Image 1 (spheres, rainbow, N blue to C red):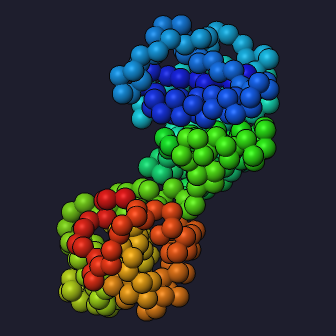
Image 2 (cartoon, rainbow, N blue to C red):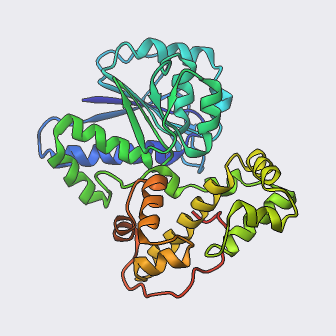
Image 3 (cartoon, rainbow, N blue to C red):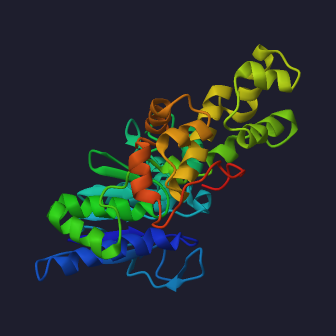
Amino acid sequence: MRIAILTIPGVQMLDVAGPMDVFSEATTQLKGRAGYSLEIVGLTMEPVTALNGTRFLPDMSIKDTLEGFDTLLIAGSPGIREYEDHRKLLQWIGRESRHVRRLASICTGAFLLGKAGLLDGRRATTHWNSTSRLANMFPTVRLEPNTIFVKDGPIYTSAGVTASMDLALALVEEDFGRSIALRVAKELILFLQRPGGQSQFSVHLEAQAAEIGPIRDITQWIVDNIAGDLSVETLAARLGMSSRNFARTFKRETHMTPGDYVEAARVEAARRILEESDTPLKRVASLCGFADQTGLRRAFMRRINVTPVEYRHRFRPSGATAVNAPPPRTLATA
């Protein structure tokens, strides 16, 4: 099964190497049965330099056809904007998409799919830090910003960087079944299906917080007083503002309502305790400002689509101990 991986200068190396290792391991696990063959496509046949400085030679270029290939993967790059109007590249993607059974983008590679007109009306995702730009550029795309990867017909899109391996595992399972995919996941120490969405690994709270002024100060105060009374009335009074004016200003500056921000901050604090300790869930809820354990669970399901118990099981290292209070920290450490 032939797979082509399109790369551009400055490509995120893990967007290339991650899927290649998954497909290579799958071929090993097939034990002699026909597996995958992989070829890297460059804009030219010149060496490609990845973002981390790695240089590699492509096997083919966009002058070549993908007739006979099964899958085309489009790797992402922080510098993707430079190539979003590359006429020959976009024409090649559009033309060769008709020669392959399925097409997939990794991370910001979704922007090339969008520019080629292949995401119109489809469900899609990309790296959490680029979802707003994708939505603005392609308003007909049905964006799913918190998913690890999305399948819509023959087109797949994935979140950033390590999500490339989640996507590759899904393709292996589709091709050769769950048993082979599970063997690959075990060998590479991966989740066969990662719990939760990409927001649990992002710094989206800091990215959405106000940069200057009283709203920035109150967001930090929220984090430092996570177990206290964080009602709109209390927060507004602290800034000497009316509740209505505070709520309106807060949303304008952070793109979140005060209630949304407070809940997200409390989930963030709870995550840290769950990762670092054996503190009982009832105590975790109290330390983080939730009314009870049920409130904690509901917030986790809304925010990251896993229960606190599931989150602790997946992400807490062995040897953790109980804590009495969450350590003060900003929301940037996700």
